[in-house]
Length: 258
Ligand SMILES: NC(=O)c1ccc[n+]([C@@H]2O[C@H](COP(=O)([O-])OP(=O)(O)OC[C@H]3O[C@@H](n4cnc5c(N)ncnc54)[C@H](O)[C@@H]3O)[C@@H](O)[C@H]2O)c1
Image (cartoon, rainbow, N blue to C red; front, side, top):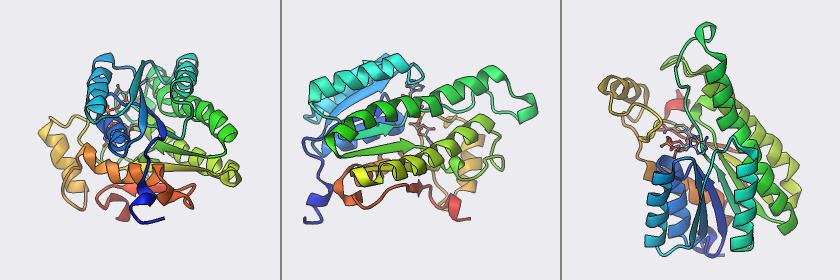
């Protein structure tokens, strides 16, 4: 296979959660630009409509599902409908996630916030991965890509206190390793992306103090744009990564090298 063909995702079917904006939209666009069919799932109907228009503008076959990744039934139904529509499910981006609604030290942290972050960031990955893997096992191939965070590999308190976020992202990294081992002999690769700071709706990127603090923290002294995730997304979704599994791929401008 030539270096160009190795990255080919033409005709493959991808399911992307959190696709209404930010990194998920960039992942969905990377798939569409590579010729894949894309199912986009998100709780944000307006953002999802924009993503669908962008994907179709790229000439891709695209379907959308409005739903909550913490809702097992909604995720199961959307994955089943995707397999019906596309005939297979080759690539899953379990990407939807939220930050701690009220960043705080643990002794002041609310149970409601904890449960919601766990439900979205961890249960959401479980539901999507399980539904996708069921099909991938039948097919005998697949790519599962979870969006964790660099805060799945280190505590974030030097920048801000995000206890539930850190806990869930660390869990996603180790779930990725476990799934990689479970499916290693079945031609299904399972990897995690661990981003640093990307300009999305996740953080208060319109707050100059926040931007100054994270820019100073990042060795490259800049914040990434969502499009900068596309290379990593295409690598992990394509044959280029066929011998890669259980990886936590850091894309963070050098933060984790410190
Ligand atoms: N932006 C960063 O700096 C950064 C860094 C590390 C990790 N991440 C991770 O990247 C992923 C994507 O985040 P982003 O930065 O693009 O932020 P974002 O807020 O722009 O996008 C997240 C998307 O997930 C959707 N979403 C939220 N809750 C949902 C739910 N319950 N069900 C379905 N969809 C839901 C949102 O509507 C949104 O479209 C998240 O898992 C996040 O933790 C982001």
